[in-house]
Length: 226
Ligand code: ADE
Image (tube, rainbow, N blue to C red; front, side):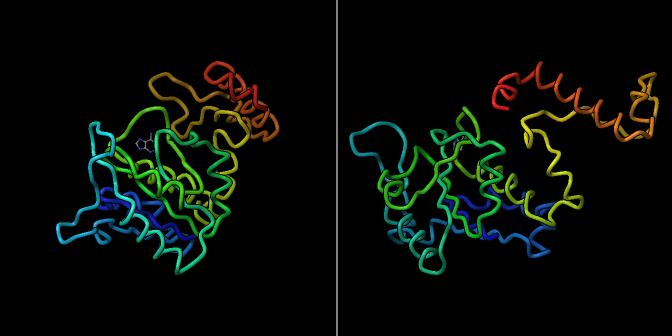
């Protein structure tokens, strides 16, 4: 999978892709992430990429021309399955969306900044708008990192034990059951004895029941969709 991320401040996003699992995914050639600095597509030598909104109001708007040039250059090189704009008014990211995107080949992610982007970019290029939650960030960069992380970890071979992505919270609309590791007793707190029983069927039933209870208590809405 190839992800091209367009941003006015790409430096904001470097470290998540240079560390740990995402770094290994890139080194193994399972994912490629390319950053594109919008300033390179600026209109003038002052590096202008934003301007005041027509009709007045606070904040600056990312201009149509640099964004169109950048996206069109990328599209001239390859076909893209999705051109995603990260914005608080998009559809809210969930596991189903991450699953769907993980089988795509080429994705552009466009990060808004300041007040937003000229509507004509949305009309011309954007195929999908995604929010990472009902709150407003300073820009789409952190949201793009979250989205890319949620997608890349699903690519075959990225996680050591492929099973572990399949048993994530949300994959079956259930939250995860509690997990434990050594020691067996810590400050008087014991690991549930069923997990030490060595009986896989009993353990699986217990974990499922725990997952159901936790989901019922914390996120009953997930069970309605089951
Ligand atoms: N940009 C600003 N806030 C955002 C959010 N919640 N999700 C996606 N992009 C954003």
